[in-house]
Amino acid sequence: MVSEKRLLELLKDLIRIPSVNPDLVPGGNGEGQIARFLGGYMEAMGLSVRYQEVVPGRLNAIGVLKGTGGGRSLMLNGHIDTVGTEGMAIRPLDPVLEGDRLYGRGSFDMKGGVAAMVEAVNALVDSGVRLKGDVVLACVCDEEYASKGTEAVAKEYRTGAAIVTEPTANKVCVAHKGFAWIEVEVLGKAAHGSLPWEGVDAIMGAGKFLSELDHYARETLTEKRHPLLGSPSIHASLIEGGSNLSTYPARCVVRLERRTIPGEDRETVQREMDFVLRCVKEKDPRFEARAEVFFARPPFEVSTEEPLVEAVSQAAREVLGAEAEYVGSHPWLDSAILAGAGIPTVIMGPDGYGAHGAVEYVSFSSVVQTAKILFSAIRKIAG
Image 1: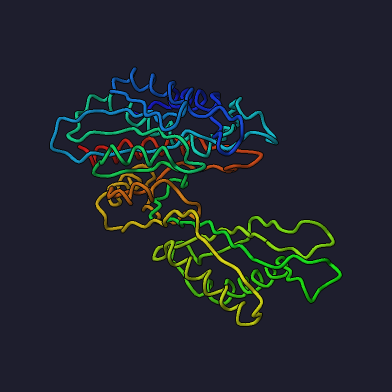
Image 2: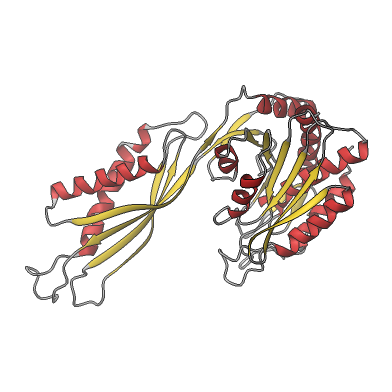
C-alpha cells in the first residue's frame, strides 16, 4: 500500500532540487538534475528507465513498469520544471511541513502530483500485483513554457490511456482552456509633430483597435459559454511603438493572448482578429493593420463516459468516500498534447495553493489521497 512516510520524503527531495525553466528565467538550471534523481529513484523501484534529452541539458525521465501482456497500457504524466523563485516569501527550496501544508516552490505546481504518481507505482511494485498492461511514468520538462517534454513523449509513447497529475483538489478534470498568442501590427506615417496633416499616428490607431476589441470581447465572447469553463477571453499583454516625442509614430505593435474553449481553434481566433480590424477600418479609412496568430495550443475535453474517466472516478469514490466531482481547468495543460496524439486522457491531482505565487504549498493529505486514487486506478485500467 501507499507509504505516507516514503511519499513525504520523496516530495521533500523533489522540492529541494531546483528545476527552474530556463526559457522563463534566464540562467534557470532546468530539469537535468531532477530528471536524473527521478530516473535513479525509478530504477531502484525496478522500472526500466530512459532519459529523453529534449534540448541540450533538459531531460524527460521515463520509467516503465512492464506488464505481462494483453492489458491496456497507461501513462502517468507530470512536469518537473517550475517557474522562478525570485520574490518568494518563503525559502523556496527548503520544504517545511506545517500542519497539512508542505511549503516550497513547485510543491503545488506540480511536484506533489509527480511524487504521488511515482509512489502509486512504487506501492504497486511492493504489493506484488502483476499488471497486464504497461505503466509508463513520464516525468517531463518544459511544461511551463512550450511543452517540449510532453511533445517528445507523445511522439514515442502511445499508451492506451493517460492521467496527468496536475493539481485538481482530487476532482476529476475533464476539460481545460486552450490559448492563442496574437501579434497586431498597426501602421502609421511618420511626420514632424507640428504637421498633423502629414502624419498618421499608429499608436492612436492601436488604441482604436483595442477599443473595438474590448467591445467585441464584452458583446460577443461573453455569449459563448462552456458548462465547466465559462466564456473565452482576450487581453492585451504587450505594446510597443513610437520613436520620440516630436514624431508621429509610424508603427505600433500589440501582442495579445486569447484563451479558447472547446470548439474553438487557431482559425477561429484569426477570423476574429480580421473581423475586428475590418470594423476599425470601416470607421477610419486611414487605419492600416495586420494580425497574425503566431502560436496556439488547443483546448481539451474528454467525455465522462470514456472508460478511463469512469475508472478514475470509481477509484476516487473508493478513496474519498464520495462521488467524484467533474471540473474544468482554466490554465492550459499538457493533457491537450496527449489527447491530440490519440491518447484518451484525464487530469487528477492534489490540492494546494500558490502556483507561480510568492507563497506556494500543497496539502500533503491530498497528495496521499492522489497516490491512493492512482494506485486503484492503475489496477482498474492496466490490470
